Image 1 (cartoon, rainbow, N blue to C red):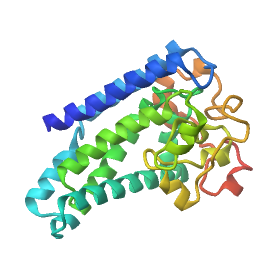
Image 2 (image 1 turned 90 degrees about the vertical axis):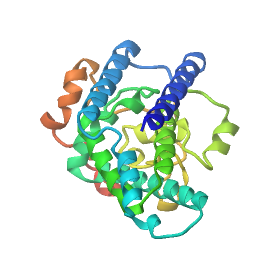
Image 3 (image 1 turned 30 degrees about the vertical axis):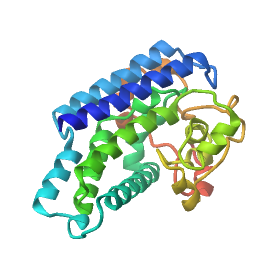
Image 4 (image 1 turned 90 degrees about the horizontal axis):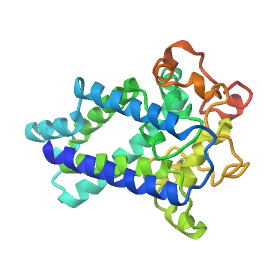
Length: 278
């Protein structure tokens, strides 16, 4: 458990520091809102999330993986497959299921209420990756725990996946500029910042695309891939159309957002969603 925390924190802080410096040196877009206020809000949510996890589920996925292994629960505890095969398969399955979870967070109104907190950021940078409602964090952990039990995943595979997931989320939300050839090559395998930025467009069709967090293959295979935003990365609007005033998006209002506002028009049915308010 201690090694899991060290690995996750190392991945988190290491990638965060690198991307924050990269944003300072070579940002992709000029920010439209106060960086200080946004960072205060986004880091504030992170602190709340950490406290909530501390008193609820914490590192439940790894703990459950260890318990399931000790008690012979789950698929891989019945299969005598090589360890490296299990690690790869567990990683692929978890990454795909996180992709599906992300799709459902847009498709189901009750989940979209929570997920809007993430999309309501009026700019996108490495701190946007930290901007998730505490209740969404808990639901995500419950989902991962159920997956880990069903798979009988080895604890090392879960630790590895969690570390990669944390680091990749910070990377692909970063407001960084990279050579076009590098982006084109990298996105054949992993989600790049330019690829994921499309997902944060105010345009419903674009926001219903590019759901992947690490591997880019799932969007291509499942037909949810859009290469570039229609208005270009420099001109596109980030966030949600119904929330455009930063003063109304302070930390308290962000936490209360799922409970006091109506549901926007995001849906996995793009033809229907385009005609609704989003």
